[in-house]
Image (cartoon, rainbow, N blue to C red):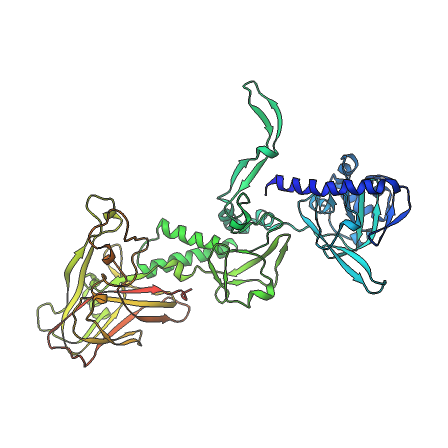
Amino acid sequence: MKTSRYIFAVLGIALLGYSCKDQWDSRVNAESEIVGNQEVTIVNAPVANFLKSEASYSNMYALFTATGVAQELATKDQLFTVIVVNNEAFGTAGDDANLAKMHICGAMLAPNELPEGQRLLMWNGKYVVASLQTDSRADGAVEIYLNGLKVKRIIKTTNAFVYELESPLVAMVSVYEYLKNLGEEYSLFKQMVFEKSTYLFDVGNSRPLYTDETGNTVYDSVWVESNPLFDVDVAESDQKINIVSEFAKSTVFIPTNALLGSAIENAYLTISNALGREITAEDSARIEGWVINALFFKGTIPPEDYAAKEDWTSAFGQVWRNTVQQIDTGHPVHLSNGIAYYVNYMKVPNNILVYRIKQYFSYYQNCTVEEKAEYFQFTNYIDTTAEPVRVNREGSYNAASNDSPLPGVWPSKYYDCLRLQIKPGFTFTFTGLVLNADGTVGEALIPPGEYTLCMGFKEKLKYNVDIYVNDVLVKANQSLDGGSFHFDRGAGGYPEGFNTKASGLQGKPANYDRDGGTIGVVRFEGTEMQPIVIRLVARDTPAVVFGANFFAHHWCLKPTVNNY
């Protein structure tokens, strides 16, 4: 968005224009000339006078007059390239300044200075691109096209080349300009995009006016907008995306306030139901961060290409899955430096919302008598003691030293286990629970998708079990005799943000609050959140010894990369 870049571009083309002027001054009184195989009509008058007197361009001149462009053409001491259409082609093209300035370039370019791909920087900051085509009906004559529109006539005045096209140029706006002008229905998205903008004083393009009594220079100030989404102050190779530059192409998906609000509300509901806790500031930042970073893409995505690939990776590394997310590919908005689509449906992916769902069998002690009977069901266990099923504390671990600030961040973990003594043929069916802030329990509701199931018991349980989730066998003949299943100390990942090498940790940080031993991959089908029911069935071999202890510590679901 740097003004200086556009100034330099105009000056560069203007120099070519002055060269062209020198070339033609000796022939200014001729009626026509051939330039680069193109017939050029010569008019011995400035371009403003010519346009005013040419009846076939009266609509075009009226547009230039209404927008102040005609006055600038008459008074500016420079050379021009002017693009026009006749009155019939003009139709109802419009009367806005952006359209008028789209037809004026501050450099005088002759036909032979418009090779294939030549760009013309117009007064509205947009580029017009020249292309050449051979006319097979005219002995191989080359025709000039500007933005795909055929040049019908070329006129050279004393200070301009005028190119008449078959229809007006379309004054497209950039991605940046389009987003800036979105209506109130899109205000939440606009706020997310532009809230990080800062405005920097551009001393190089600010004109000094005078020096005040303190000796400071007072400027006619130019301010430049800087934003991480379109910061042009870094090298192009380091830019994630640039929605301002006409040389950089991008794609943006635009959600309404209603869609954005619904996606965020559903994301909060997913976290609350799955994890059984209130929404935190970190949750909000993560959700809103995904939303804004998932909607911008480097390069253009044509409508016909969108469905050809399931996963599109945004400029900021987020995955947009077209089998879940929906955009209106039937009505793309073509912009001067990219393309925009409106969003029909969006959701924040599960693997963004849920780092892991880890809950404990010790919630048994928080249940009412009725809840214990509903959520914890056993067969073939010793029930003759006063308290056959109970919760025992089997140990604890504090990863942080007492004199560091970490205890409040990484609290001590207590190995509270559901304990009972079992017989051969033992089964245990358990409905996953969450512990509410008031100490009551509720059913854990799992978002649909794919997860890795991990569990923890107490080591040295000398028997094997089959493990089912919602009546689907996940792992047959799973041994519970191993360090990987020793509470949550031996396997899997760590709490989100936990660094085993951070200062202030003590003991064995690698044993702190891990996922547990891996059981297998489970899938929750459908579109609605649903409970999880885990069932363990003891195997005949190695046989369960009568009166053997059973200790269950936790279960954990970790979203896989496929969990969207």
